[in-house]
Length: 307
Length: 226
Image 1: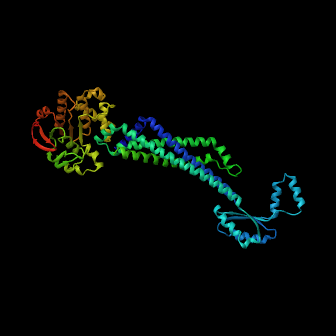
Image 2: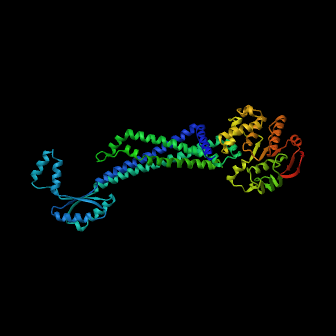
Image 3: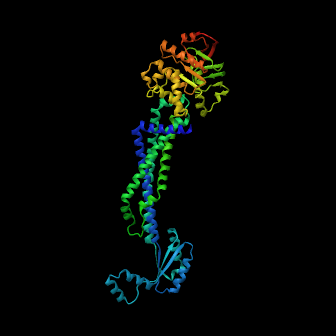
């Protein structure tokens, strides 16, 4: 009996959808649009996170030592720094290694080689590169390097430039996120209002049948279920459309998006492949958002007009 | 057995619709409830189908005190009580068969059971040949018979008929009353609210007369006295 009743509730939900087909389509479109904005927000978040992760991997503190600082002293400083819990690794580049690297990098430029020969001595200093476990630790590491303890050995600490880039990137991402969240909120509200009216009209157009259902002993679930299921149906259709739009557009644009975001970065990240491997998360996120909006608005309409 | 014990019903800002009504209706009885408009006939029937709740008193149907009924129990009560109205309340876009089947679907009956039962009920109300006819293609009497057939879909123990002949001519009215008597002979308790004196007098069944919400007469094999 429960099975057949459930089947009839679902059948009636489809019938409700058909009876007010244009309104149902409008609701589906607005909900699809809302989901597309949520998916856009999700994609921007993934790309931004990946971009930052790549940038952060490149971030380090470059410490340049004074010419008077001996290699043994540099080794001691390295030991001190490497022992810190917030430091991931350290690397010393001696002036000779730096020069060799410089020569290698400019091997095809004869003028550079000429200039170096004229100098007669190595112009590059000894240096040390420090990578922190998390970008937020750089501030602390930098300040401890600036303490009196190391003052006589260190010429320069270079961190600020990369920090500005990261902060700028985070700011841009936050602006995009805020705008997308506001848009999601506005469209979410629209979905609630339109869905509410769709269900209200459906209840109105079925008032005669609802009266008779009550008269002949229909349970509350049998009467209210189709309206609730109609909203879930709209949610499911919207999720299907939005998911299709996401995958089709990512498949088409992934190459350009990857090029645009990750140019100059050593990464194989592919946004389309990421979306394919995270399909459960993507569909789950949409289902939660769509069904919550749908059920909330139809529940309010049912409570108000179907008591 | 239906028992009303000191049942009163007062609608907001109006004089009482029922005042301390106490009656007993044995199972299988045929009772006509008569009275002028506003006497409380429809209120009595609405209290029985839990469309309204009494302001005071108790109504017990076969040991079930329906004045204490919970909202979720109302559908179960209504499946034991068939109701017939003056305006038929049929779905215009469904055939006679579908209107009756609709009531059974609501209760969760299986398709096979629906097909068998609806055919039997249509035969009972003598409408087998109108099974696939829409309400607007039927006479008033036929529509009321479909309405009665739908009320019988659950094989109820009690049938409440609220002015079922109100919109019908004499001939069709008599057809409907004959049908109600046939249903009563099959064991269903029938409560007929009417102000059709010819019918009440011809029935020679129990008659409860209401006036301003009070019972002024309760006679076995009674007559219309207003």
